Length: 235
Length: 212
Image (cartoon, rainbow over all chains, first blue to last red; front, side, top):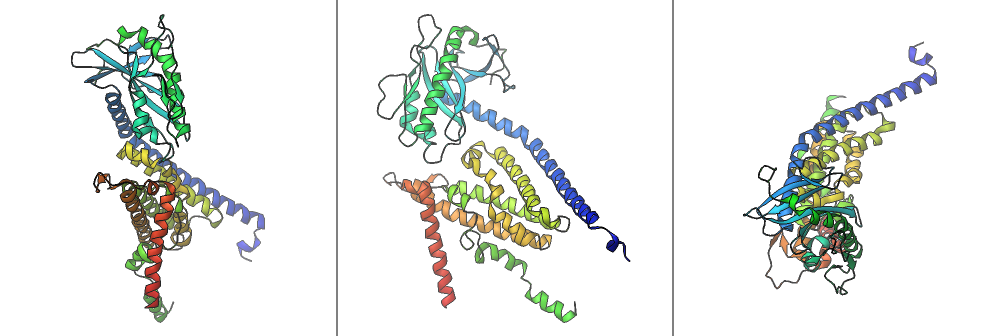
């Protein structure tokens, strides 16, 4: 009698399982390696493109600047010059004109949108105590509806002179930035929504409200830390 | 196999060109098989998005077809679907990184749909129906044919939707300022209208050919 006929059904199942296991694990390992190689191969370029996009965005939200400097917020609430490589820290970007005078600060903010986390960048001008520019860095909002937050001119005009004036002790924003419905904007600290993109625009209004309430007093009080430093890493 | 039988088998076997044309035209995945509709309707709102999505899908299809076909004797049939998904997901992740490395803006506009290539039934159906039963070269040609068929179909939809809905092609305006855009063509409903329109044309010609 041949060997295969004397085998019990149990051994055959074991052989089958072994084969399945080897195939799955083997292919799994090969696939994992392929992904790791691609990740390693593209990582540098992806980071570079993201940094480039961010730098372009800084110039968009701070009109009239010619160079930028990166600062990070320490745990004591102080701003110090940074090389911007550690993305886990809270970073802000100071913009200067040709005479090296501080024109404004670009601040990153994020929060929950309709589809996913929304990441925005806005420009703050300490001289006029207002927001002077706004740009959506990352958004997965519904194409054709929610993504209007990136293109709708009327909505974007909200952020041209959005008031974030501080109280007399410079510790709080007098009127927190709030979202309002389309057609009901009355004050310069309100963000007027878009019909058909209610949730996305409301999310933007709230993100701006929360970020400005904490960041603006900190930045205003430490304006001198952002003075142009020739030795600081600038671009 | 006797020599006569072998000759007959060779004569009946479709040539490489046939295999390629099959996916591109006769069995076009979108216009004839009507599969993989999620990206077809969702990402065809502009010619650029459609082309990028089509090429990404075609790349995944060709690569997964080749790998699955070369491993066809090694993959036990009980776990074949799980293995196919694993292989497809790997290539999708690679494409995702590659697109990010090419352009941040393009990645931004394709968004979640890149990851969804994993569950595109066209790719899984080619793996199951073709690559797991045929040689590597044949599977590669089948993947290329089907892939380009998909690119072609997506581009047909994307260009029509962008021209009517945005008055431009690849971002270049082609109509005068006074042109009133058909916003609906950019919205999901426009995807259905355009697909219906192309299916109408395709079926009309098919029927006409069948009659003659």
